[in-house]
Amino acid sequence: MSGKTINIAPSILSADLLKLEEQVKAVSENGADFIHVDIMDGRFVPNITFGPNIVKTLKRITDIPLDVHLMIVEPEKYINAFIDAGADILTVHQEATVHLHRALQSIKEKGVKAGVALNPATPVANIENVIEELDLLLVMSVNPGFGGQKFINRSLRKIEEARILLDNSGSRALLEVDGGINVETAKSVVKAGADTLVAGSAIFSQRDFVSAMKSIKASGEEALSDFA
Ligand code: DX5
Ligand code: ZN
Image 1 (cartoon, protein in one colour):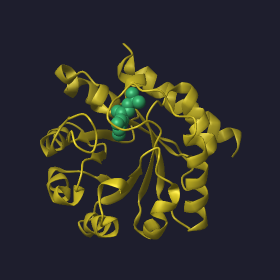
Image 2 (cartoon, protein in one colour; image 1 turned 30 degrees about the vertical axis):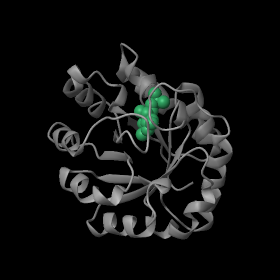
Image 3 (cartoon, protein in one colour; image 1 turned 120 degrees about the vertical axis):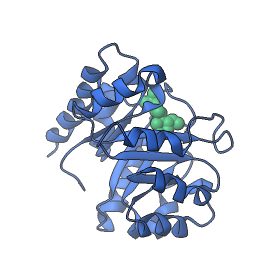
Image 4 (tube, helix red, strand yellow; image 1 turned 60 degrees about the vertical axis):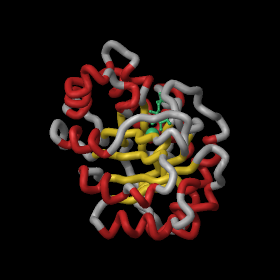
């Protein structure tokens, strides 16, 4: 395993935007490891969300690292804008850029952690040649674009493959999973080798969303201790 701990990254996509400050502060003060920010452009995915300004605004209300997931075409055009806004981890999709290596380098050059995300249909082998550049590998376990979708079971095989690839390369990149994560799927993905869990609807659809977040993280940690 690259990390001996499990990170939980609540996705604000499912937060109540009218209570965003309150909800982000609540998760930040109660054990969130990252705040996951989903940026969608209506082209790479069939939905539109936020721009760099949300990152800048979140930065004013939390010290927790901002994990910015760019679901946009030609992400290289916006890398600087998101870094200037305060992204701590910036993840681009492999499918969204022709020059993945260059995109990752330009993120790292600015001292920001660089991630690559893979859609469900994309093989893990597609990032083999950029593995040295990675601080985070994000395996999508739903097709990106919306919160509240069902976990794709086939993702477990991909997480296992990703774990092997990272370990064999001596990479210390985080292995993050995003989509359909709840108390049950958290266990399965951690057993498959993930260490970082994004969860949106399973957290923010609950009245007591802080407990929901803690339960998902605890469930992942329990699965980790099962095979430690
Ligand atoms: C989906 C986003 C996810 C989303 C996950 O395109 O990348 O981060 O917020 O939502 P849940 O946890 O509800 O599947
Ligand atoms: Zn995401």
